[in-house]
Length: 411
Image 1: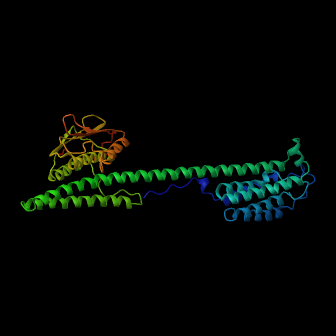
Image 2: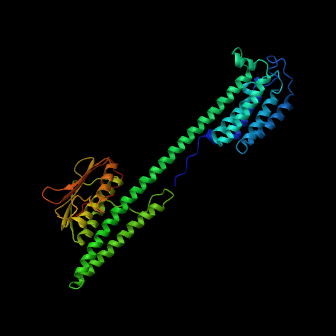
Image 3: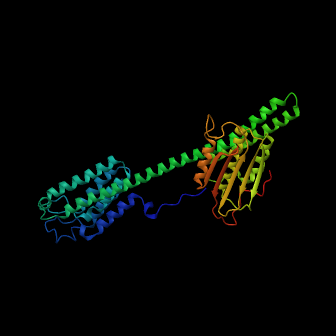
């Protein structure tokens, strides 16, 4: 089982740590301290010193610790710490934007990761604090409306708005990615269900066709030739066992949840001899002709070629009223595998795609070939009979890759 890759280092840092680091930057930067900015704000109250900063840091860290559990209370504590540290409660001191780094970081993280109600409440609380503060500071409010002066407190409000918008953008991007992932998962499930339906049809229809023919033969000769009836019943038993084994393999695949490879071996062109033998025993002789030197085949191409032959032979059994069919597998053209099944039958439903119960076999084969980028043809022959042909592209494989198909098969 493959392990899930670890997220990037920055994404592994908890939100509480980011908010705490933002507070350390804000508290350590000289511009956010009245002791370093006294020349710019002569009317501000004197700062309480390092003990005062330590107390504000304790309050800020408490707010950082609550950023995921109680986001609104977290923002409130950070605002109290920031305003207390900068003496923002007084009418003569403006809170600089840098003093609210921790508040803005918390607001951005809350908007990006918490429910929308918490995000809006936190943003409303921050803006309420800043609007009231701007109203107390002389010059800032006038500057906003007249355009003659924009103070530090006004910049802090704008920075808070930017933090909220950034968090909102991150949330929307994540939700969009999750929606795309969910849609891709649904499409993958649908595609897998269609693949399983095709596999079930190909396997069960062929086996049940043989069972029906052998059962009919046994019923006709059971009184006159009991040994032939006994042989037919044996063929029915073998076909039933093969079908149960195939269904069991499919159930194993469906029950797999850990992503490990299946212990069963998938079917391929190496099974043509078994298919030909079973079908011949059911009353339709199958002659397999292989041209060219077999090379390594990708598993999906090998399985598709076998399913094309299996479905075509099943149609001969069920519809063609023919005593024989020819299966041709051609490897002579580089980068391509050709499969052809022909018969000279005169049975009903010669289009093999019309009428009740006849519309899924060839349609499934056509879709399977199209998914592999190949070409598919099916139709009656001019002189009578029916032909199914497919050309499948074969990518070049390394010599170390084993072929799923075996040697030459004789019919």
